[in-house]
Amino acid sequence: MTTTDHDDITVLDAAFKADAHDRYAELRARGPIHKVQILRGLDTWVVVDHDLAKAALTHPALLKDATPAAEALEAVGFTAHRPESGLGVNMLNADPPDHTRLRGLVAAAFTRPRIEALRPRVTEIAEGLADAMAPLGTADLVRSFTGPLPVQVVSELLGVPEDGRASFRAWTS
Image: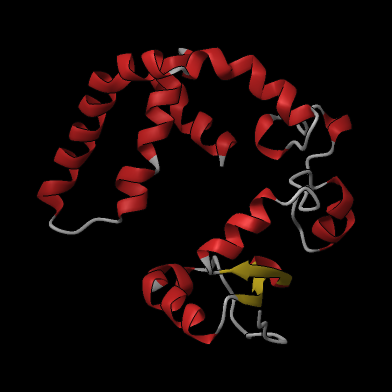
């Protein structure tokens, strides 16, 4: 495994996103793991090798809960959702055993038959988003399709009214 001392690359900024395919290809050519900066100058690690990323994401020592890093995150302007704030414990940023408990609460909504029942509506939403992009000639796929699709599906599942979906998307980001 090779890492670089610091790649002097900022990921997640507009320049990186504008050329993400080539930038990730460059990182993969240089090695599987890179110390990089994310927005606001925070150093972090990017793993661009599939097997190593899978191993990292399933390793019990890799935490999703940002509480241990709260001071470092807040020092560069990120809001760390601490458990005492009421916003900290959700399935996406929880570690076991909280993650396991929360996943159990929603598992029944995501069984194979329930998901199959959603297929026609998800297809309809996806086709509508694609149809809206077609006349544009060019479009940002994330902004026009892959971002709105899950937000619209989940909004409908949760009963979020149409006029509340922009706020819902901002909250989930």
